Image (cartoon, rainbow, N blue to C red; front, side):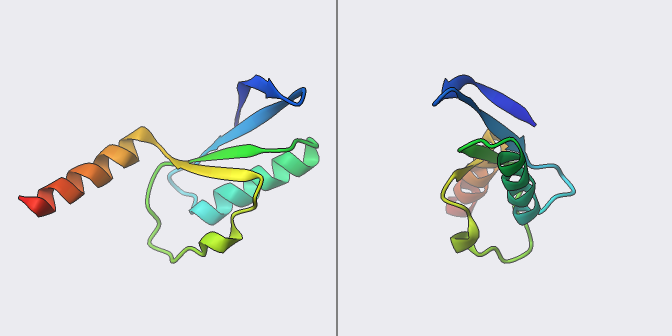
Length: 85
């Protein structure tokens, strides 16, 4: 886990990069545990791959944002572009 260097309300913002062997739910849960144990306010999960599992997006805590890793964003874009050809 890394921390965003910009301090918000005098607290760092942890960033969790999803590991290859983690589903998104696991990454979010691990980050939420870190936020709670360190008494932080917000966190960021960087999604590195799409899960085969169905994901309930209502379960993302309001204090966590999930963003796609740039490689995942490019892969999605290329896949979509290929379908158009």
